[in-house]
Amino acid sequence: MKQVYTHSNLALVNRAKELLEGAEVPCKVQHEFSTFSVGEIASIDCWPELWVLNDADEQRAIEVLSIITDPAEHSQWQCPECDEKNDDSFEICWQCSHEKPA
Ligand SMILES: [Zn+2]
Image (cartoon, rainbow, N blue to C red; front, top):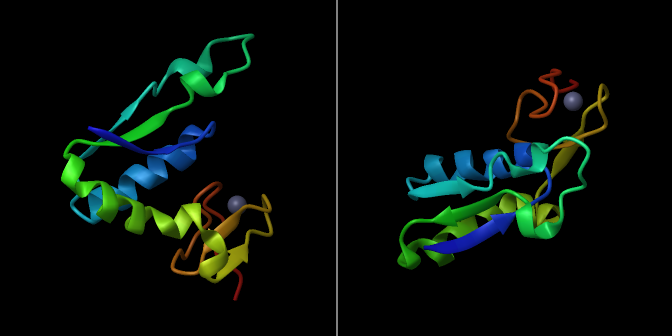
């Protein structure tokens, strides 16, 4: 297993997982619930992590995830509702489901 992505925001890690699943790369999220401990600030040690099950998939996973790890290379739109940046291929905001402005 290889860790290919980690972020303090579980929603982003889950989005990364969906991208890998869409590319048929077997993967799993670890520490999925650890950031929700009440009253604690999550240290990087317990951020949710995305792992690929097969080491051979690591490079492919990194390429697939470049869409979120390297957003400058992709055109984006900013959500008028929550100010989240969304990849141009998304028709609704991944964060709040607001529709992409025309
Ligand atoms: Zn939004």
